[in-house]
Length: 291
Image (cartoon, rainbow, N blue to C red; front, top):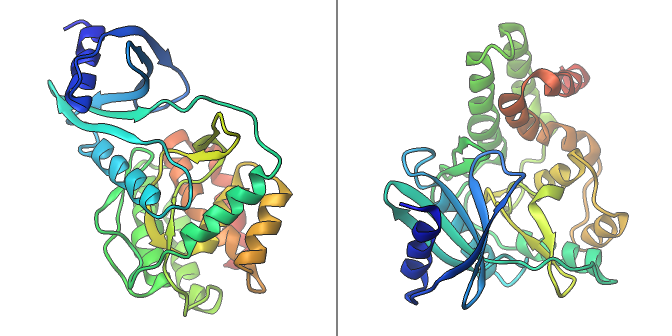
């Protein structure tokens, strides 16, 4: 079936309105999915497509995460128009976010809304369903201890992938094992689970036409809010105004800088497994500091 006609079927199925596409424009930059800006006679949309057998239910879980974040009335997210499967293709249809310029209190509002998201809590770390971080399964089995959750469901799965891909050797795996023993004396024990976006770096937020931040591509779970803030600093920090306002609302305890490096082992391992050994030195440097 012609791509345009196929996309029209998706939009009709999602909106229950018979719609004709005026323009279908590919969007570059994604590593996993085919993405399009879709202009119809009625509206504009953002559409993602992928093989339904590849990363099964990835878009359904992304839709769930976006809707959960939106339901908290904290961070802005694109509205989910539809998600599902058609002709062995999974799809996610979102409202189109028209890009604008940051308004004066952009960073202040962004930080305040993220702090509000982090105030949403649960009895356990994890989430109601497993989901994905990039192309990798992200485990979210509810766990009442943050350190156990971080080791067993964040670091160990990525370490296993890296070892199986021969990106790290047994010596480095052993270094991680020593680190795990030490974490109880480094990481806080009695913390409250916070709802996290889970993949918050500068590539996963936009500025809408109103001048506000809109987050995309969540890898949602209940975790330690420090881990989220640490990740925002890993690949290029946000504006200083963001951190000033965030820590006004949610102050960090002494030693955050050291803990941030440990939390960022998770995204560094993910990037190692995605893109290769250019991220290995960052992992080794953290292990040298603590092991």
